[in-house]
View 1 (tube, one colour):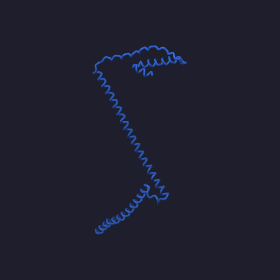
View 2 (cartoon, one colour; view 1 turned 90 degrees about the vertical axis):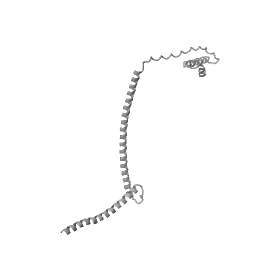
View 3 (tube, rainbow, N blue to C red; view 1 turned 135 degrees about the vertical axis):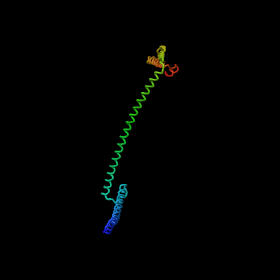
View 4 (tube, helix red, strand yellow; view 1 turned 120 degrees about the horizontal axis):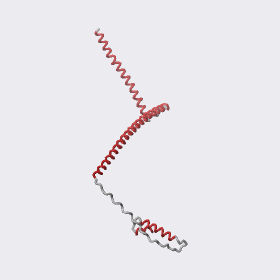
Length: 183
């Protein structure tokens, strides 16, 4: 009885080894075939070895590529939106910090102005600026009697020159410069 039990247990232990060996061989050949299919698909996706494919196979590869591109674009857009929202948060945080620092700076300037006002002695107000110089009266010129058909043109031109000289003389320019301006 013991012998039968031991021999039966031994058969159970050795039987799975034989079955396991066969299943491993089958699994290995199945995985090799799968690897070959995947490598061929990768070449097709890369645009290689397309000659033996039929129109239907090419359309299938194209559809798979379109689907993959849609997923890639969706993921890319999601990452970009997340990045943009993250940057908006950082911008808001930096703006708040900038505002708070600006407020502190204004307070510090105000405090330093108050301290300077306390420390400084009152000074007399500055003297008023001197009045602008009065224009010197220009001698009245006599109209010239030109022998042209229009006798008053010379007088009008002379008055215009006097007006320009008067305007320039209020700007405190030296007389030699005024003559150059009138020419």
